[in-house]
Length: 205
Image (cartoon, rainbow, N blue to C red):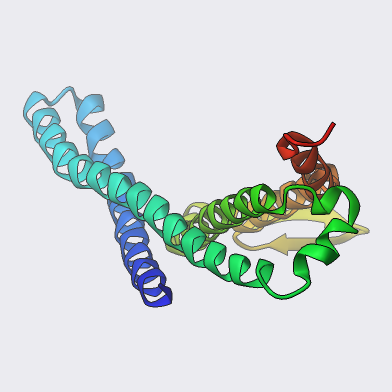
């Protein structure tokens, strides 16, 4: 099972890198396309539409493959995690201990199913999004550096220069957004854990 997950992970990484490259080429295509529109050059416009079809077609296929690999990886992770959790659940005296844990120990098999599903799906989605964002940021760093000049301002009688200010602004924005999301959603894991036993406890009064 772990070999399958590892293989799908490598395939996902390959697809992500290929998708980022295709998106980079698609961003480059915008310049000649809008130049053709500005010049009202019909031949160049039709040619750029052909280039778009060549770039967008494989990119669409790559996105579908990435979504499929995401789902199948989460499925195999969920299967392997469920097997491990079931082995732990069936250990001697484990059921007796769960019976004295209160709401957490109610219907442990259903809670196991829900926890395994949430962990596998959220892990794959978070990992894919993180890798995709990091690779995309690295690929666009040079372009952002090229289009952002040095930002200068006066402070206390002296001049302060910030090179590549768009890059730093993007990093600052991402950091503040992540911090705000962490502050706002810090109680979500505990609230979700409290909600699942009540939702799944069909046999409880």
